[in-house]
Image (cartoon, rainbow, N blue to C red; front, side, top):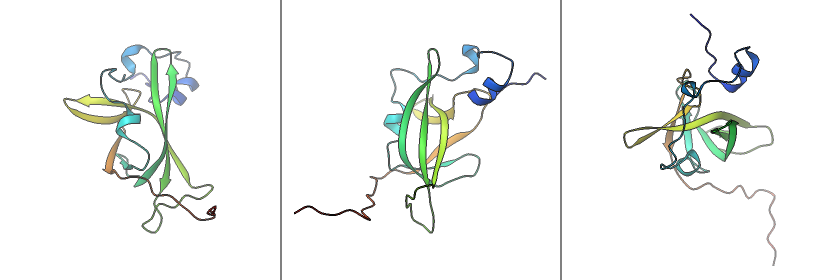
Length: 136
């Protein structure tokens, strides 16, 4: 069996060179993107047992020529609440939307990676107002 990397990081560490197009998932240009389907404030979990997390930011980046993916900055839930502190960020990188009929699936860029992200709930983000002053 030949080693098949399942992330850009593991691919870059290998001696295999750039991936073939068939090794990567690609978002359909006519369909909504991760940025549209997973807005800030959405609560997600992973297929590998982590979460729930609240999405703090969503960023699109070029992974390989002609291929892009998304990175999520997340806040972990502590004591039933999502409170942002200086070092409490988590990340999920290399996400793309793969469509199963009309249902979006949030998958990793590399086809050999079976990890998936699921929406727990969508809601507007709450504002942490600690330390803010009002101007009169």
